[in-house]
Image (cartoon, rainbow, N blue to C red; front, side):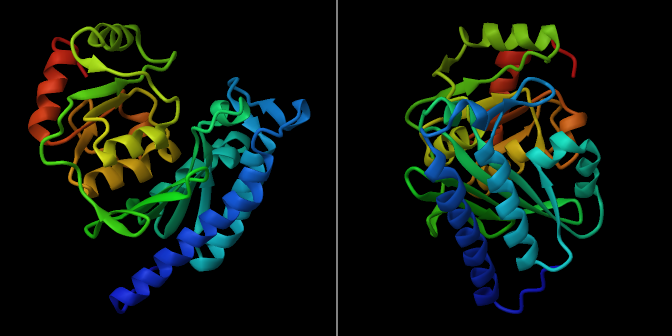
Length: 279
């Protein structure tokens, strides 16, 4: 368990995690980018794309991160695909690293430079820290519960009054019909831009103030634990569509997650998009 005795201890730990992510990306992700062969790209049980870079990056991070924190465990997107029971680790006492080795795998496999490497640290069932790394531009978003959000170590806050009230609405194929219809109609009620098909990149835009809002209907923890924490620490407000906080158990309890600059704007958007829908 983490027991920092001084701010410098926390900073040193954060730097070690930062370096572990950057190293894994430099060794496993970028050398394969735009160089994958057919044998390097496969499909998982539900048809999702996985590449050799996803698998090897998760392996590399699993080793370095557990070495940094004695007794910690791994919940990775790829190990979950092999053994769904690992999802239970987040609800147990102790430390769990939640890893999305390559968020935006379809983009990566297609040679598009819109993907991220994401890590969240869950302590006793609560998200404590998160990191979102852009290996192409070498930028790291990070956040610690109660300590703020950062970009490459520099504190980051959302603009007080975003100039543009634009955002993205994401609907997965397995969402219930009523919710999918609401999100589709919502694109005519609010100003939206095209999704980047990478949750980490959307959080990047949110934290920088390039987007004012975003709504997701697929809530797997590796896609959102890090980003939701960083967004909150930057001053934003996010909650599940049921108006409950996004937690480690929301993926099987909630139908969606929405981010906004503040709670007032969140409530306004919720009314505009989902008025009349029971959650």
